Length: 469
Image (tube, rainbow, N blue to C red):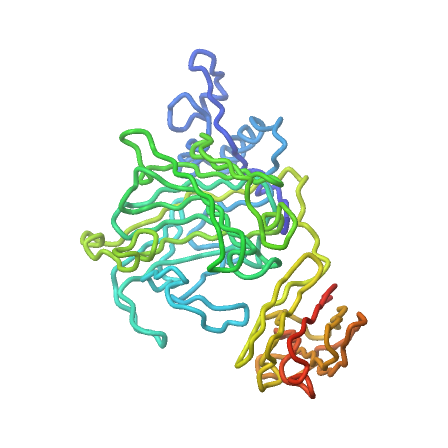
């Protein structure tokens, strides 16, 4: 876990309701039943935040925590959305309409989903203990284009992530064709490769056109388009919908993930994989949280793309979140990786890359004309001024050839620049580098046309035990 365990967080702990028989309620318990329904639970905390004193809130939260004193789960991170602004120590706004890679390079419009909204930091607000994400029909002109809808998307990336545990979110959302509320998780570090080889956990996704149901999903397998997914729907009882307040939960253990709505189990998944990796990959790493309200796109857009203007005829639409809580058992830690995975870049060449446990294998059929025409990448590694880092690895090749290894900043200034002769006998290399300023660097293993490499013919290069420390 990457979170401080403070008393303030513990004071907000609630997992399940304490149902109290109306004939047996003590005076103390009656005092804590703020909405008068005979149950002391999270709903009383919502009402208490509006009227109770700090001491009364502490007494209620301590009682609710005591209800779960026999549980193995312990609260490790939460946001109750107090105050009147989003907590910047917990959340970051993800802006725009375009997906970018780890180095910030443009990948695709619509976040890879044909989404129509432009995400801003103006569409999320906090009032009376509730975070509201508002989707609006309004035109914004940007350097990336003109967009007819705005919304917000926030995440805990680089601020909090968890491997396993119980993740619980109480929320509601307006209905309307093309609205797409989501509570979900992505890997902090894509140690098994690009999406979806490193996984995605969708705690809740809703169809604005079908508020009578929500779904929970995992994405896994291999890099798109060879990815897979498993999903199940939860159908609300007659007369209920995602427009009402509900608690959406996943309990994530090694080898099993369970989905709940209001503590009703509706889905259990365990049959996933990450290509060339050991089970339970990819769901054995730290994942961070995301909250967003998309407009249009493949999930509920018209023709899988367009937004429905009529949805906004009476104004903006809201995705409301009462709280986010993460609990941990302390028994599930990320699987350590013996070799960092590489991304593949090719230009005018013919080559493939397979990341496996402990190594990355290049299958080079044509080196192309450029030194970097075949290249393995570890992108956007943050370094601090005054720090020393070490790049180490083992390498072998089925053909004698040269390889160039670099560490480069965004301006292509090289802080490591080594040309190596490699062959069938595995060799170990280690390079130290000092940094005088804060920056991000890309680590590159260049395997294009270097020296006489073009004449080597089809061959394989294996890099193993890659570490950056």
